Image (cartoon, rainbow, N blue to C red; front, top):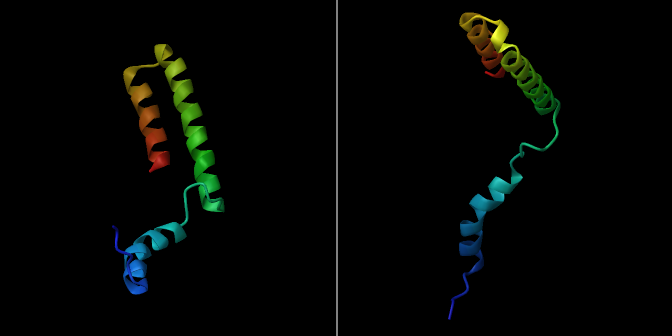
Length: 74
C-alpha cells in the first residue's frame, strides 16, 4: 500500500515541476520569437537557393554563402 505524503512533502516534490510549467515555451508568441521564426524561414529559403545553384558556383562562393546564412542564425 502506498503511503500518502503530507502536504509539505508533496509541495516539496512537486515544486520543480510547477516552476517548469511556469516557464515560457517556444511556441508562446512573442515579437522576438516571431522575428526568429521569420529569420529561420528566410535562412532555409536562402540555403535551398544555394543548393539549387551550386552547380554554377565555385566551391568557395558556395561555402561563403552557407557560412553567411549560419552567421544569421547565430
